Length: 448
Image (spheres, rainbow, N blue to C red):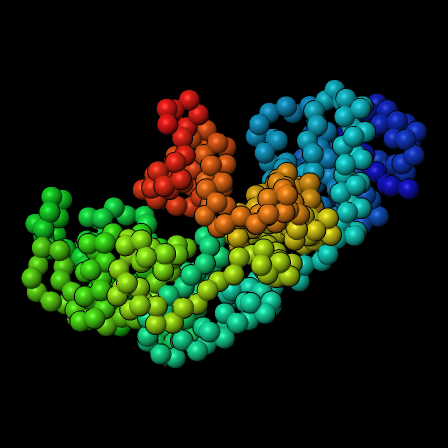
């Protein structure tokens, strides 16, 4: 029999609710002031119906005292205060629901049931250890991810160029940073630059730097990423987006280990190790003439390929635990349990956006969770259990076709708002425009 504590200074409301809830089969106790509520809201109580205006202290003080307790009851606020600030404060302090007077009995019945259902799910949930991973850890225990760890160990001992390949969101920068941290000089700079995020002219200046007067707006000398990296590591993310003319300059730097700032004829020594990453198939780009073959082989002394998340689904529970520890620490909102239903949803989903999509979904779920339990009701209604690489008839599709479909879906979802689409896809505007042209995508109603 569930136990409910009614806290209200109005005797008639206490008696009315006590009679109603008793008739519903609940064991009911009452309190009429804040000190009495704090004393009565022990671990033996399942749900507290809490008024905010109380003698001896406010309902907010009761929330502050009771909600953080271990095995705390679920608190439902019932108040005449129908304003935004009170609602926000109550939710911030841990209220499960916020109801206003006069009380809608049907609504109250449904909320109590939802609160008790939530507590039941918590009882069957998986307790999280709560240990946060080390910053930059590549989480997992699958054979595929263990192989990546070994490759990191091998390449970190030398300064040869490394090419990291894999889909967006698989953790390519994490691998680059792990290589740097495991090197003999981890205290030296790690400098990252996204080659997809900058236009050609800007990218050249960003990489090599410029001198005052080199172009309009160059009001002072500025060192580039090659110079800032010193003897550390230079990470070129999405190196496949570098235009051909700049590829030739990059190749010369890697061969001669010197470069010139934009607008300057003086040579600057380049001593950093280069790690590059791409989600594109550079060998196909070489065949198509859009990426230099000599630069490809210069960058690809060693290649580390990262598997898609759906190819290592056995890692998802461990990833969920590690990511939740990080997310809850960053948001200051603890999640202590995950229900089996939530883990099942997360494990069977195909994750086209890989680990980045998993982290984004968990962040959203934590923000929406009203208790310290993450269950499937906190997760968005995404399709689950259907591998993204298979059509309905079971026929396999190519990676290119999957990418085309994914971009088309995102554009449709954002109503062709390219700024929003870029944010969802985690790509730059020039890259999105190129993909739209490459795949022949058209806005509805637009002539082909």
